[in-house]
Length: 103
Image (tube, rainbow, N blue to C red; front, top):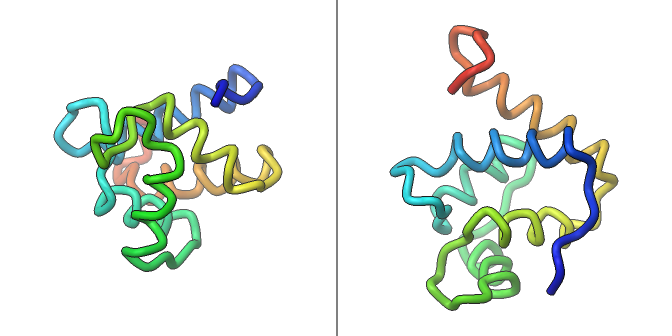
C-alpha cells in the first residue's frame, strides 16, 4: 500500500506522536503502545481491535508498526486529517508535562 499524501505539518505531527509512543526507541510501536496512543486521542479500542489494525498495515509481519505503517494506519482511520492532527496535538500536550514542546 503506498503512503497517503499528507501535509508536511501533519507528517511532522505524526512523527512526534509516533516517537512519543515508541517507548524503547526501536522505531516501532507494539499493540500496548498503540492502545495507549489511541486512548490518548479519545478512542477506546480493545486489544483484539488493535491487533486487527496492526495486522492490516503490518507489511513485514513483525506484529509491530514502523513509522511508515503508522502513517498508513492513520490514513485507514478515515478521519479528516485536520481532525486527526488536532487529536494528536491534544495527546501530545497531555504527555508534554512541562509544556516545553518536547517529550
